[in-house]
Image (cartoon, rainbow, N blue to C red):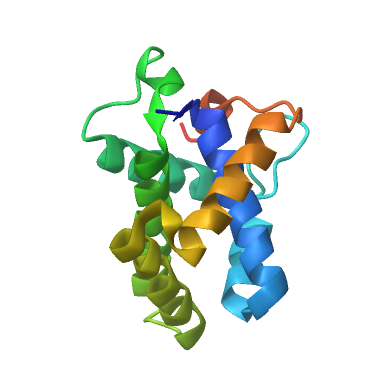
Length: 146
């Protein structure tokens, strides 16, 4: 079974969202993507956004993100972290229609697995993330949180 690093899991989420945004053009998702831009210092444009993703990842893992665990994230755990994050944003924004559409589409993966349309798009994003060489260290997400 393919395993991801935390950095690959994060990039997979971003590439997945970018592809989804290009096809559905959901305004709220575009705004969320802007919060997750990676700056030169390795932080996200909105530092709280990177921290919130880390929290969702740890919830999906059901344990703290240790250095060892940081290198062995399953595809389902990474997907679950993304789903949890979009659910949080949906609740914080009082359930805008755009995010409800995305959540409903994300449920198709949970129901149909890797062979669903969403599953295939997720695998494509995984492949892109693994090949991507942009430097990223999710530890930097915590850099300015204190």
